[in-house]
Image (cartoon, rainbow, N blue to C red; front, side):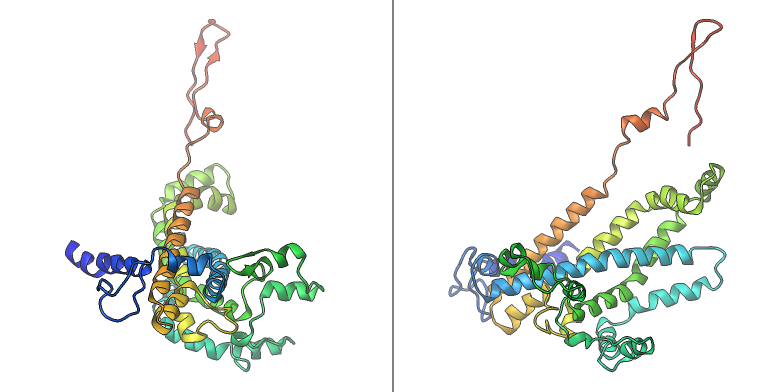
Amino acid sequence: MLVILGLFLFVPVVMALWVSFSDWRGRGSPFGADVSFVGLENYASITTEQGLPRRDFGLALRNNAWYVLLVVPLQTALSLFLAVLVNRAVLRGRGFFRTAFYFPSVTSSVAITILWLFLFSSTGVVNTVLSWVGLSGPNWFNDPSGVVHNALAAVGITQPPPALADGSMLGVTWWEWLGGPSVAMSAFILMAVFTTSGTFMLIFLAALQNIGGETYEAALMDGTNAWQRFWRVTLPQLRTALFTVLTLGLIGCWQVFDQIYTGTQGGPGKTTLTPAYLSYDAAFLGQRWGEGAAIAFVLFVIIVAFTLLQRWVLRERPVSKRRARAYQPSTVPSTATGTSATPERSSR
């Protein structure tokens, strides 16, 4: 197993890391004599140097950041809701609903993307249903406008304040960063929530079935309602499952590629461009292999950083001294004998 992992995982990663520091052009061996070490030149071209590669990388990060910001909470909340729903003993046909909710997850992402292109076309089913209620749907996959900018324009705000228009990061102004996902990216966000919630539902469902019934019985005896039982009993015991779902969701969202490749290839106006697709475009289409590898490793660092941050947020915290005192035996003076008595407290 170690040999197989080393041959097909470790060695290619080391080779890609070397490519990100070299001027390899895709011909011959990356370790050939004609390949030179260029240091951080490939990383500088996408982070510090003025030019199109830097702006494209900034746009890709902006698009992907909005994608992560919306998909991860929505898919986590929906998958948890579905798991609680199908875990109820009073629900009839639980097996059918579990299969139905999970089915989109086992369908090819390419097939789902093609289906989505038909559903969200200008004359597709989505716009047809919207027309029934008097709404005119957008041309989803051809509309590069940001949803936040559209919402601000609806209340008369069309020009950015000078602070947002003048400041920038990675060649993208703060006004563009805050524009929200484009209408086209919004359709991909809906698709991601639709296709991934079923998988994460199974993770939550397995964790829910491991919670003992006596825990809920004790909570009922304490007089808790349904919301208090979920918030104080169920959710704390789902910490491990929640960490797994959030971690897998973050990794999957930052690595989104096949939907973009099949659907829009970064368009319209580069508003669906993602770092994973940009890495492919720079290396395989633009023959800038060092730049493509550099984008991949910057993306790797971003994923690791967010995973560590998430693990720190969801870590097990020690009980505070104030709360711990409520569960410790207290010494009560005895008025009859002058001695102290320590009554026992029932544990919760």
